[in-house]
Length: 330
Image (cartoon, rainbow, N blue to C red):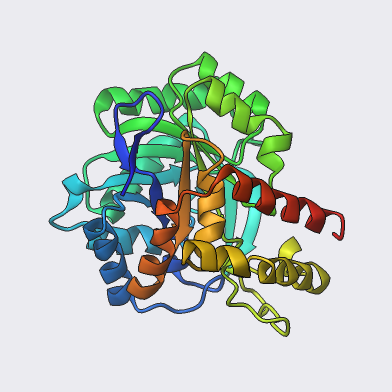
């Protein structure tokens, strides 16, 4: 497995990371067998995928608890990322969403961050976090300046509770403001061959220019780019796919049509469509880290092969052309 340095942090991590949103289960993803999830995480590490990403908001801390179980005895082999900024233990914050009877709020105040990190450390059964990521950015009416957020994060670095700082769900102005107040080593944003907004809004180029690792989440578009979803699929009510742009029927069918055109590439590289989708994202720059989800060892092993595929420039361009053609039909 290819490794890379995360930003300027001196942290070496696998170029492919395991995202654990689905492992958290809950309404968005359904019930999981936690023992199978633990096995998946530990097998990831055995395969050289040492970057594990989680968050408190993934089913109210359950994802962190499962990751914490998996890390027993192997913590030093792991680059562990978790997040802050979405809370339900306080009434302070700006509304984010209502889920399972709980009101989740955005809060990146110094007080909330200091409280959250202690809860995460306990759930993860560790005394430090490698990369601490602001999950969603602060907004009115409970707005916290990035300077205050960074003050709290820099203090946590000095205390040894975190090693590096990251940010997710940001715009270019957010990134520039973070950089004014300290070292920012990772940006985590949605990026796939059919969702290329980070190319258009300048975030990808901003990361490259400032030596910030760009971590792409949802490169498989919640499973749509695996080729395993048929034309009759309807997302269940309450699921993470329900209401998403690419799972609207006409869009989904157009994507499936595009995937059928990948058959020759799958044969050429002796790989799955999921492998091609991951390989395409990785091919966009050596500063890009690719995050993928898996809930079983089999699923993890299959998808992990994508990072080892080196697409030719011609095939990379061909896949982009297909995606741009798809855009015309959306």
